[in-house]
Image 1 (tube, helix red, strand yellow):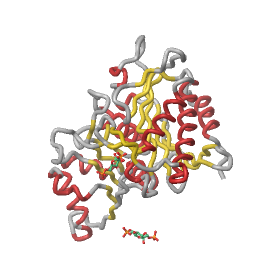
Image 2 (image 1 turned 30 degrees about the vertical axis):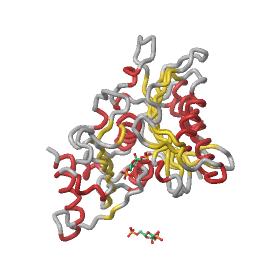
Image 3 (image 1 turned 60 degrees about the vertical axis):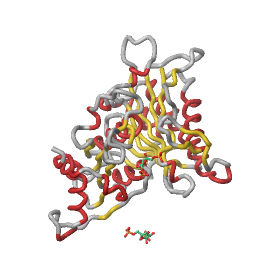
Image 4 (image 1 turned 90 degrees about the vertical axis):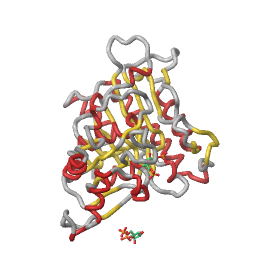
Length: 332
Ligand code: FBP
Ligand code: AFP
């Protein structure tokens, strides 16, 4: 059984590969500590009075759950004073959060979806926290929204923590993907999987099928071919899974392969998709690529999209390489 803690893993990465400067290591450890607190609140459920709606809406016009707000506060409080960050941005906040002057300023920017899959909170299904780390542009004295508008390939760390039957932190710093399971007795994240690889082929897709009538032709064609099974052009049967928590769907794909799609659809023709580029697609896209998979918006690599605004949305197709390539080629 592994005894390598997250701290030791990060120290060893820093020593042997030079991937993780001290401030970044501290940042990742602080995010992990915040995720432990969120995990604790999630586990308490009704006993902790954390379920239900907060009666407020976020910048996306979505009703906020109590846990959305709690998780957001936990991440901000944990990260603002350590001296590793210049600013933060969250799916739950309209503008950026600049680290107050009373604290030292660091070199990094942290972006997060504090509680992804919030429609699953009450029904006791896996949810998670997604995070992405960028470096402050050099020679920049003040922090503004423009500093955050960097392509996904500029991320220096990304990951998520899934609150499910186990609480697992999944991380990349650009040298593959590692998974750490929370050992509640020790109170620490322990390395349980390294060099995670997504098989290039799969027989499992994840998409919200209730939106089928709104899809564009390439997505409809791909799913129709999967549904045709052995007798169809693919010559094999496919299985379907849809958790409605991106963290849970991506975690399954990192564990056993598959393809996940939340494509543009005709319900909101002016929006490029439902999922958020900076808080969901970029960190998940980088994790998937680091595990040998692929992530596109149907036309281009997610990580090469130049964001124009903080809460930008995007169409997402990610997972097993050969399937993502196929759907992407149907868009050309
Ligand atoms: P297991 O007991 O083998 O895990 O099967 C679970 C189950 O019986 C139900 O919990 C679930 O609703 C169903 O299988 C899922 O079936 P399918 O894989 O056909 O979607
Ligand atoms: P919330 O965190 O607002 O519940 O959204 C979760 C999510 O962005 C993503 O995690 C899911 O894949 C997707 O929404 C589910 O969307 P549908 O409810 O439209 O299937």
